[in-house]
Length: 521
Ligand SMILES: *Cc1c(COP(=O)(O)O)cnc(C)c1O
Image (tube, rainbow, N blue to C red; front, side, top):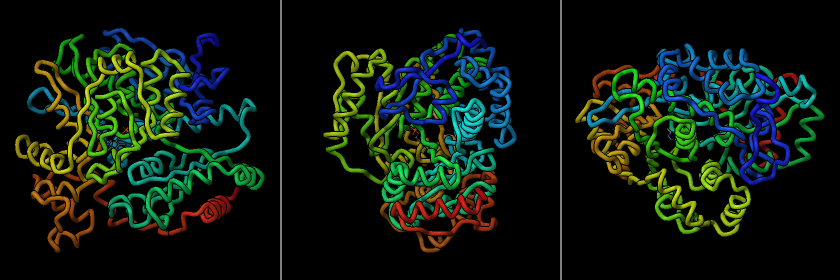
């Protein structure tokens, strides 16, 4: 790959004057000025390339697509990263198999990785991009310190980040979750985490307290200086705005289309629709980029739960968080009001108009609301359809699909399934992103199968079960398919991390220092 062909990264608010390399974009995460990095060039794939790619092992497909973006990591290194990211750490060699359901519905199962949620598809790869990028920048003198990743999580992301960064060179990771605010399964997934470079803290307070605490720590220049002076460490985050998290997600949409052709589900060139249960807009945006690259995707179906800010936006052109409350739902990973990756989509729809984006984001900041212009709205309506599903309908969908087909879905996937059923047109197959194994949310799946509403008490004997025991009960009742090992074994693993700290910046900073001290920095 010649110097001249290197693809570089600009930002969505027009702040970056000299476009940066892939490695710089990955290590920085967020662009200066608060915008998000996007590649200057989106590569184009031929239809027969897409179809041929599907015959390769998944890791090779991923490496091929990463290399099509022409970054500054050497191709052999990309190859190694992809092989490590998508290997025996997944419970099937297909990595993300497709399950066909009646009525031309195709479930793209993105949860066969180590933590049983779709976050693994990106977070098995990003840490390796990060470590390789940081090493390359250090070698060329552009970076001095090693990194500590600090993550505030409401559940899924924390575990996937821990598992992804576990024992990766030159990086340590600390995860904060709200003490008492995550499920038994989620707590045990994090508290039993293996690896020498990881730590986990419960925080007294709710998720907002965790996130606010983390933001204050990130925004404290004096603390950053101390970490540099004392430990030669810089803080970084692993959130879903990092381009290195988005890129791996493009792969499975390209791959899924090719595999649908190979399996005879469709003919090469036939359009499909893609339906995604959406929170931060990362997953559905990856489907958009797959379409841009030439995958014959017709429409993107955006599925929301009761936090329907995106559905309303796609249907009206106005994004409004000022006039709505945050609702708790059985699909907590989509309980989001500010959907950060939408910014990249708007950047693309406006023909990469950084000034327009800057204005809308300023409106959102000032008044909790922005409205896109008519042309942008029109373009969005050509691409997207959107609908939302209320909490009880979500549980009813899990039950109906199970009773009709024997297929058990988690609540996030059920939201997408229901929206796909509402919005689909006959004759066009729908690929549905299935984003979590049901056993991550076994409690609500039990409710769904037994017709117990969310505000009703569970029977006392069921409420007394641990998350693992309840999952075993559901699995037995629902035909005995095994639960993924990482979830099934949780009750048997030692609890390594049970420390609970205050959510104040002082307490978090003290915990970070204590951890780095023990790491022998
Ligand atoms: C994170 C997550 C989502 C939402 O994905 P976005 O990329 O944030 O839109 C949906 N389902 C599950 C299970 C998740 O963990």
